[in-house]
Image (cartoon, rainbow, N blue to C red; front, top):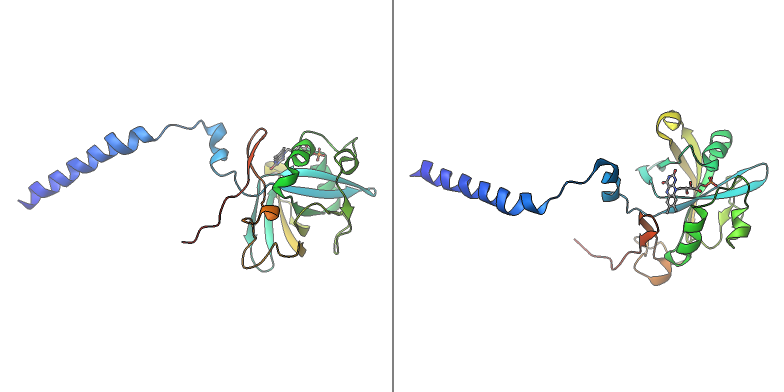
Length: 204
Ligand SMILES: Cc1cc2nc3c(=O)[nH]c(=O)nc-3n(C[C@H](O)[C@H](O)[C@H](O)COP(=O)(O)O)c2cc1C
């Protein structure tokens, strides 16, 4: 009787898997796999060399430690920023609000090698406290960073940095970053020119 019950349970498990679960999943080509993880805030990295600051949008970034705070960030070697960071070892991670999406996008379609992106896209440089590159006034948060490990830079374009100073617009950081308040909504890159801004905060 028990064996029979087990068989029935197995039967239904299989039916569930093949009839319900499997058909609901579709294969994602491996070159698109990153799009399932791509929703952290897109940031603007400011770096500086020879007194000239530059701006680069970066979607691929993540915290890796609390204390001292460390971040892993992928700055492609196709970019001018990569070469500045290799030489100077410091930059600022600025958090842009969703309201400046068009400027962010344009910064990512232009190289700062020959263009002053602050001027071209109407962004304002303000001094940082612990590093030479400036912060972007129009942004709502700033993490001043120094590179502490570039052993993965050549192979994976990944830099591990330590955050040496941090600031945010008044009211933006309470118990959590108030992405639910209109002017503090962050910007999240999906693909191409598609972004989203967070909706409401939900509690588990
Ligand atoms: C929304 C957005 C997100 C981007 N994220 C990244 C990223 O995570 N890593 C990267 O290497 N390039 C990324 N890019 C591309 C660079 O921002 C782009 O190559 C930029 O022009 C480099 O600027 P630079 O040459 O002045 O340093 C992104 C571009 C956009 C528009």
